[in-house]
Length: 434
Image 1: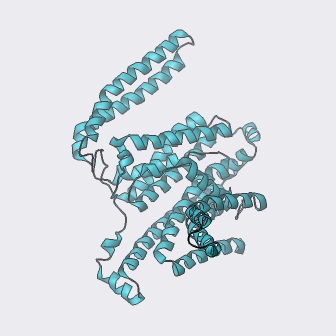
Image 2: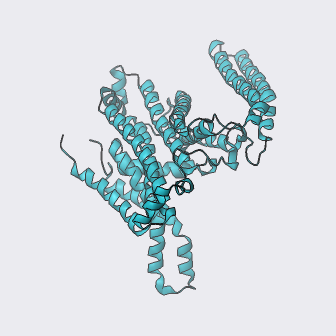
Image 3: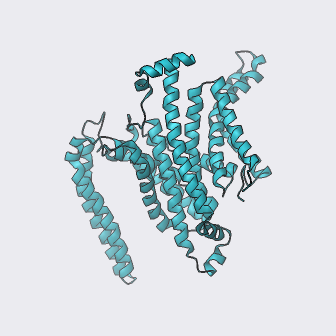
């Protein structure tokens, strides 16, 4: 197989730009950009599986990412024993009653003959289930949230190693995707986009309002980390010695080591995912998925179960997004449901896929890292450019003050321009599908 020097050159250009950030700004910043770029690449890889392989227009990326973030809390945080004693049984019983009510309603609707009796039975089943759910669930939630609400007020987690939460985040997101897919995958592409966006908003609203589960808008902080913190790193003598030898401050050296450790973990996960993705894409299964994407009618005529295959790829892509969400929360060290903005960041992920190259795994990875680099660096670059262009106006200029105050908007402006230029001059992306 011949070496594609052009693609290697694109990756080399990205890492050269990252090295310039390290040399001219700071190496901790460069490594932080790299870490979030790797997470963005994994998220773009998940969306590329859905859109690039099968043509599924999923706009609910942030919902599955948030589920992955919740997994970190459930798995790694220590349990709040008082809250477990006060309301664990009631919440579990209420949730089971709710699930049983939905299951019973489905059976009633399917088994009974159409008519007023079926409607009455359905309404009665839902009403009884709702009353029973409220009877057990609400008092249990109130009891949990009353346990030291300033610092806890939720159930906590299982106290397991935080790295275990990454695959668990993928599994939880896959389970949610199965439910969403069974409901929404029969819809046409534009309706599927609306449905997934609405479901994403529902998931994030649950995280914001169900304090017993995730502390809601009060956030869960001080999450366990897979590597030492910078403060802990500075306690080691070899770190201080290394910083002295390299002429760096101990704070800078410890930040480099911590961010570098995360980069190695994230790169290892990305390497495994892209190896598996390439194997799948070039297998008979991958060729079948592309055939369904290109001509669904012909695939059905050949006996392929299109709906089932769509569900498979929807679950896989969502699981990868959930994994990325767990990694992102681990890097941040906190779960903040308010940061999940479906419209804003879903747009950003789709720009990554389109710019990188839809249908190409290496293109999605490159697009994720490049677009995140621009997202971080465009604002200071725009501020510098505005400052230089308006330097002759004087410090009291209203125009200069207005432009400097709105420098942050250069992010969205740049993303929009980059997307338009790519769609106009290179619609297949930086690394197009072969």
